[in-house]
Length: 154
Image 1 (cartoon, rainbow, N blue to C red):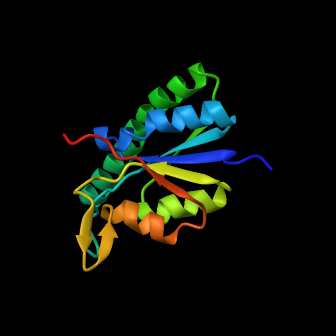
Image 2: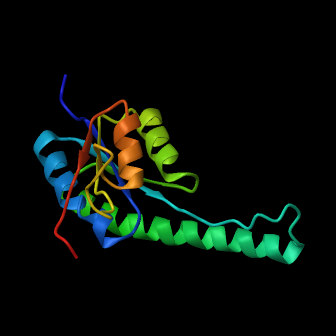
């Protein structure tokens, strides 16, 4: 059995999340892994029970635009991987970030998740080390290994 055949890289479009990209590329090249780039959108939806038609239309257009921008973003990154001979696919989701990350990891049979915590810092809270809320939740609940890539302070 080959180690880490499929790597998942969750990205949110920020420079902090992109700190994981060079690590993912290096691992994929060295191990011959395929890579899935995942962008989870956090789209705030108004909590009005029966919104007017114009609001529903605006929400739908906003969601479609966000998905298109996320797909374009991932396509640019995927090209960098493909140019290096790495097999890569992209996925966009728009539910709860940690649920989408864990769900994609399970559904796609991922062997390793590589992500960068959002660094409101590594904090010792009540005797427990915290790595950023989403990274922390993924790390604690994942059934596969999670590699957190910490970068320099901005």
